[in-house]
Picture 1 (tube, rainbow, N blue to C red):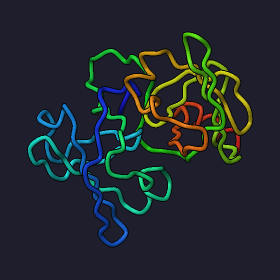
Picture 2 (picture 1 turned 180 degrees about the horizontal axis):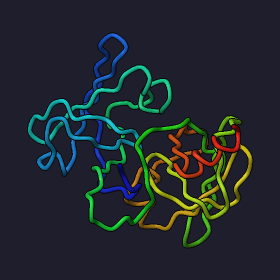
Picture 3 (picture 1 turned 30 degrees about the vertical axis):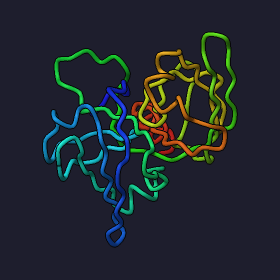
Picture 4 (picture 1 turned 90 degrees about the horizontal axis):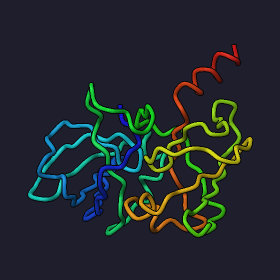
Length: 194
């Protein structure tokens, strides 16, 4: 489990395809604190550390993960939002995040509001993918509050700190992003379909 509060950024240093798997090697300032078999969220995707070498570590994404997220879009030198699993007994500063991406969306608009930046995203219609006004959403692993909730889209308002310390700093209109909808909302949506 994660909180959606990004701990640091990692930089992709190597990508290696093996059959349908993708091995991703990253450099990070927390590499020395990691251990093999540890779960780590990468742009909101929970991946397992499989190797550590100096200040670099490697994780592996399988076909299912590549098909349902933007992990397969990564290129060398890309920045990635990183968050280690939450500790029991610690504050939950974001919201409950599983690290299981539900779908991808596309950034459709970015507006500078002189103190905040408003990003708008659209995604494919699915009755299980819902947002509510002032509800929680995870975009590329970042816990955010929904504004302007629509059937297949929403906006978020980002403070300057979040923009500077996450991959929002380089996000552009047209970029594909990972979305994890609120887990409680997903259960409610499923129950209403029964």
